[in-house]
Length: 162
Image 1 (spheres, rainbow, N blue to C red):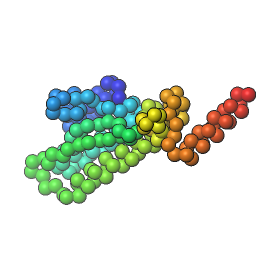
Image 2: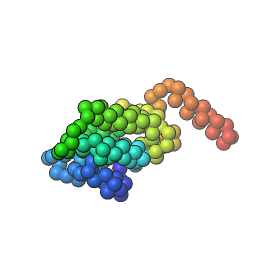
Image 3: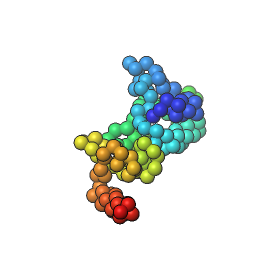
Image 4: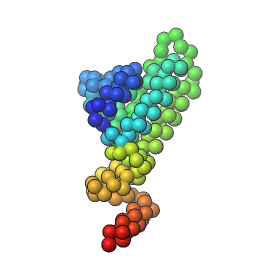
């Protein structure tokens, strides 16, 4: 993700992203958010939910690593129990569910543009891309139904061009 977008998130969620740019021997957040700009809104929404949970539960979520892996978002985190809070056991499950939901959503959001995307591959590399980005970079959909649909779109475009 570009630095400007990363810094907007760090400014909005300083407690969760407190290790951003930290010592590489202590945190993977040293390298920032290792994903493309298309997931900015998804990350912003995830961090907003985690920030709300942190403010109201007594459990502070801290991002350990944010990256793309196998074409989807990975959000690794730790939790710190704030002093003098009686933390409900369900809080850990809620945090886990919120993170898992965002990771699953990323499989349908183009990591470059934020538009609707599908899982694509090229020479063993996996990415979630919209048709335009996949075409630019030589990726093809993994799901045969998506590939067929994209082929139909290409045929219609070619028919219009001729």
